Amino acid sequence: MTRSILLALVLAAPSVRAEDLVARVERLAVGEVAAAVKTPDRFEAITSHADSVDAATSSDVRLETLEVVGPNPFGVASVRFRVVDGGKAAGEARATVRGVVRGPALVAKEALDRGVAIPDGAVEVRDSDLTRLDSAPLRDASELQGKAPARTLGAGRVLTQDLLAPARVVRRGDPLDLKVVRPGMTAIARGIARGDGAPGDRIPAENLVTGKLVLGEVQADGSLIVLGPASRRGR
Figure 1: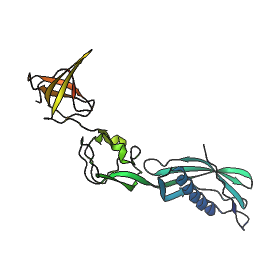
Figure 2 (figure 1 turned 120 degrees about the vertical axis):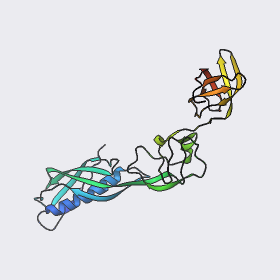
Figure 3 (figure 1 turned 45 degrees about the vertical axis):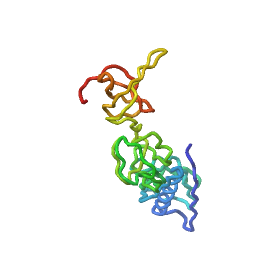
Figure 4 (figure 1 turned 90 degrees about the horizontal axis):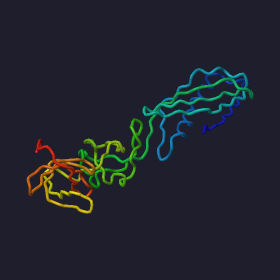
């Protein structure tokens, strides 16, 4: 829903000069963009530029906010106003505002390795620049449960959900249970993982009794549900 704010400009002179109106459009645009950013984040303006605005014909000028778009991932927002001069619509004014969005976010205190569950104390909440993030920032350590970086992340990186993936629970060389599940029956054998995997991944493993290589789906408890035989490549 478009928020409408009225700005009354009453000057001693018989009309409002164009440059004065431009300055007020630019100032009001900054406030409108700041109001559009939801807490706990905030907008810090760097520049505000209004398109050319004609001089008013009276000393009673109102600006009605019609639309606020942005800020976008580059920190740019646009604001559109209706100009009301002496009680009559007198066209529109537009302004472009550039700045940064800042707010609290989880940040890596140290390098975080790909696929490895994030250790306690490896992240902290900091006031951060959120302007160029591809998705919403994470703000609480509970959001990291069961997750690990999808790629290695450097210290100081703001964490977002798209940077994370399920944490590996099995690593190459780990002993584990191989489960063959049939209706009404589950057979379990011991094996050795021949690959790394997070829950839901499919990796090869070697049956310690038969020496055969099987393909299995990683479970949250670190076991494998055997799906069938696997190629011996990469053993």
